[in-house]
Length: 385
Image 1 (cartoon, rainbow, N blue to C red):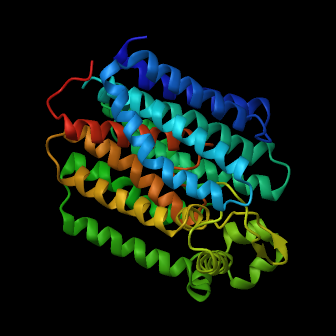
Image 2 (image 1 turned 135 degrees about the vertical axis):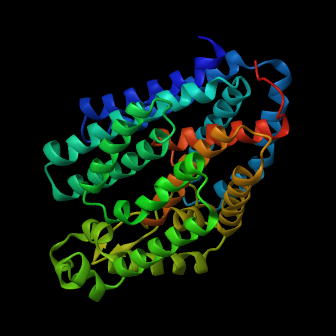
Image 3 (image 1 turned 90 degrees about the horizontal axis):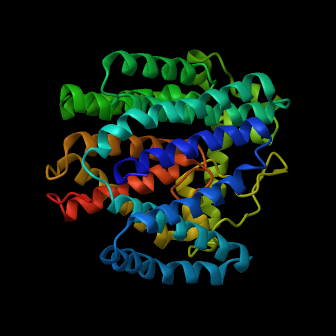
């Protein structure tokens, strides 16, 4: 396998395997095993393609993270499970970083051509599962909400497909898929999902982006206000009484607000975190919600601690600033990365998703793109061969 095709092919295999696992077992029980397989495969692919002088950089990164991971394992209610989680995440980080060291400039065009179709397959399987396979309303809602996320990722990556015809087709399918998923967050964030691509192609001014942000903010206010919600979407707060606890958290602004309050209370009680992947006793409408706060940022803060949360947010603030302003890295690469990261950050606002979530190809892609961008920042004129 050539170095330029390694990363695109890896994510193609990941997407096909993810979709295939759901087809074989719609309940999703195969996905954890497949994710572990892809973590190990990524590490082996990274090791096989990297040169000896690149290993010290990766080792330094891992060693810098180890004290944080060790502390998190010590305070965890289940240190063994938390240690396993950290081990897998660090292995995934090593694999994606080593893989990014071996990328040529031509990788960008290959990624533009392959990522959107790969994620389109995942969206199609999830949408089919939600509409035709899922038996309970709970499974249907979960599948459709996840399909909406991958529809947004298809839009974000599809905006960079070189051929205009296929760009239009792929993005149009994803827009329709996202808007028909029943996810209000998809409708809410759609302008922001398009923003990086529009800036790249049309050099939209910052004032226009501010206007989009104001519009999205207004929509967000509407969706969190029961009176305005009933006037705009025809849904009243009283309609939530027939939902079970998971549906309430997924579909009700009131449910999410209550979950946010619960999450903040847990952070106040133990600001150093409860352990990577550990459940906290979240009760909503008298039913246990596990550790699902429906907010990726709160999940990071409750599981990892406030200190990790601040580093996590700081990384993204720095990253977005550099992606927008640093011209030493090719513009197409910067805005493609920004577009994917943008979707991940938006997803975390309404669902429990972060870069620590090893169950989705989107997490691995984000880690890879961040690693690749940082490497290119340090060596803007070097071809990684």
